[in-house]
Image (cartoon, rainbow, N blue to C red):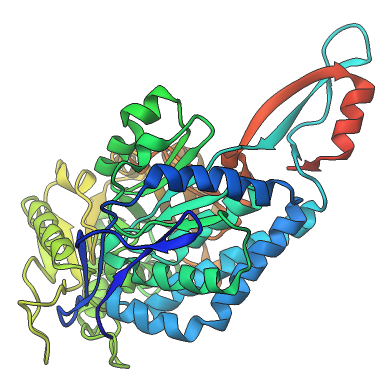
Length: 523
C-alpha cells in the first residue's frame, strides 16, 4: 500500500491541507501509509456550508426518507467491504476478526437505524409525551415535542474504531436530520477516509450532509454556534478540553462525552472451576483482553473474584493468554495483533509498570515481546498481560487504565466488599457479572447499576448466547457516569434525543391534537 496524503471533504469538495501534521503508520512493519493535515483549511466556511446546504437537504425530508438515506449508506459500504479489511489490517493492526467488529459493526448500526427511520414514517418531529391538562379548563393542555436542531453535529472519534465510531454517530444524526462533520483520529483515519470517499462518489446523500476532517481540529470549535452539537469519544483529558473550550462554554454548545473507563467483570462467589459461570467468565475476560489488542473503551480492566478463587482464575486465564498467537495479523493463525502506534505501546507499558507497583505480573509485561520476523524497534506489540493484586488497599488498579491487552485480578472478601471495590472505578461504561444464582445477579444490578451505563448479567442460560461484554449494540445505551464521561449514545430511538430540541407546547386541545397527528412517538 503506497503512501497518500489524505484530503478532507469540506464545503462539498475534497481539499488538501498544507504540509504534514500526522503520519499514519503500519504498526507491524513501521512503514508510512499516509499523511494528513488541515493547515490552511477554512473550517468556519465548512461549518457554514454544512448548516445551510446540509440542513436544507435533510430538513425537508421525513424520518422515513432519511432512514432510506442511512440504509443507502450501508449499501455503499457493503458493496465496497472487501477493500476495507486490508486497510484495517494495515493501519490499525487488526486481525480479520477485529476488522469485522469495526467494519460490520458500523454497517449493522446503519441498517438498524434505517429500519427505525422507516418505522417513524412521514413525521418530521417526535412526540415525547401524551398531552397533559394544565388547568381547570379541559381544553388547555401541553405536549412535549422533539424538533431537529438547526446546526451541525461535530463528531470527534477515537482511534480504535475508525468505522464503527464514524457510522454509529452518523446514523443517528442523519436520521434526526442534522448534518455531520466527522473528525476521525488522525493516526487511523485511513479507513474512515476510504469509506467516506466511497459514499461521496456514490452520491447517496444531499450536499453538505456529510463532511470529513482528516488531520488536526485546528480552530474547528471556534466556529460553532448554539445550534450545533458535539459528540466526542476519546480520552478524559481531551474530553475536558473540548467541554471547557471557551466558545463551547460561551455558546452553551451541547456536548456528549464517551470517555475512557476502568470496566469490570465479576465472578459470583462459589463459582467452581469448570462450572458454566466460571468457564463463561474466563472465556469473556480472555476475549476482552485480546480482541483489538484490548483497545476498546468497553474492555475489561478489573477482574473481580473471591480470594479463594484468585489462584484458579489466574491459572485458567494465564493458560489461555499464553496460548494466544500474537503476531502479524496478515497471517491466518494470528489471534492478536499490535496496538495502533508506538506511542500507544509506550503508554501501555507505562500503565502496566504503574499497575505492577502494586500487583504481581502473572504473564506478559512491560517489554515488547520477541516475535518471529517482526522488528521490535519498528512495531507496536504488547503481550497479553495479566496482573494479580497483592494488596487489597491498592489504588492504581482503580485509577490507571491501560488502553491495551492488560487486566488485573482483584480479590474481594464478600458481596459488600465487591460492590465497594467496583464503585472505586468512578463510573464505567460497562460491567459484567457471571453466576448461577439469579437472586445474586439481581442484587448486583441494584447495587452497582448507578455506576454504569450498561450491565451484562450472565447466567448459564445465556452463557453461549450473549453478544459480549465489550460489544456495543445499537439497541442499548452506550455511555456511563463519572469517569466514563456522563454521556449517552445509541439506545434505539433514545439516541435521537441529543440531536433534537425538546420543547413544551401549551395551547388548546384541538391545536395540540393536530400537532400530535403529525409527530411520531418516541415510545
